Length: 399
Image (cartoon, rainbow, N blue to C red; front, side, top):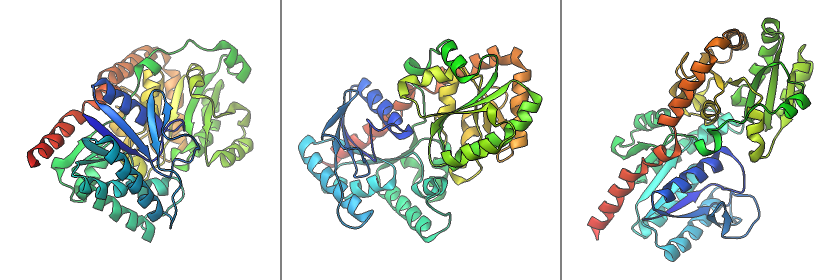
């Protein structure tokens, strides 16, 4: 079976999107399927076409002409048309945002191919979360209509979590078309934690500290301002507490200014972005990974990837009680949940975790076992098997 994937962007760019894509494609290949890959004009890094990264060849649409959005969709559709004629796939599989599906709908119909549309987050809600949109605005409502339109025309619609699937059912999308491909972890990469990197610990001034960490992107919805605001109370309860922030993003300057103004600013360490190959070294320094996401539609509907990586790394996880976290984390079992948008509740939860170190080995094991049992990429990828088989069988029946 040959699947043609349509992607917003891909490796060698590094993002949660590209790492999930890589894992899914490699998982499909382990099932014996052939995968072909096309990115839209939104892949902004120059390079050859096709560009081979980690054994995966990515075809590029290239720059789009014409008006914004419409020009991108038209350019992607033309490139997809050419690639379909060249590789003759059995299925077209578009991955959100909705622009990929808009480009793929007409191409799939012209070539009599089944179309799968897989949603990682609703584009309208992602724009609100990233600070580029406003909930309920004209653009928000128009984008939501396009998303619903694309889902109605796709032959199957996947999503990364139950929150998104529930929203789709409320929109009237046929439940028989819906399926889940949950976020997961590569245990070969994250399942064997490194011993504490003593050299790095000393370099960062973390020797002997109670280390709270965050490793990821600095978007407003991640709630890192609440984490910094919680630090004075945490230090009062746990005088050895330190905060390690690894990553970068739109909120970086504001967060650094907030930390500089904090009475415990010397306990807050910004490392910046690090190479993906170096992330394990920073995980090795952290006792508790904190995920203080703010309460909003995006965080209620979408499950993040990072808490699963932390569990695989045998780290304790403390997260706000938004819907996306509740779908991943069982409070007091695989992690600790605290009230969202509440720095005092966050500080109290972290202090309680550090005061209860005797429970850490058992909690780490329970969380690691959960990931190994329920949240590996090979397990997630099996969700495609019945969907693809149904669609290809239906197509054969039409011939």
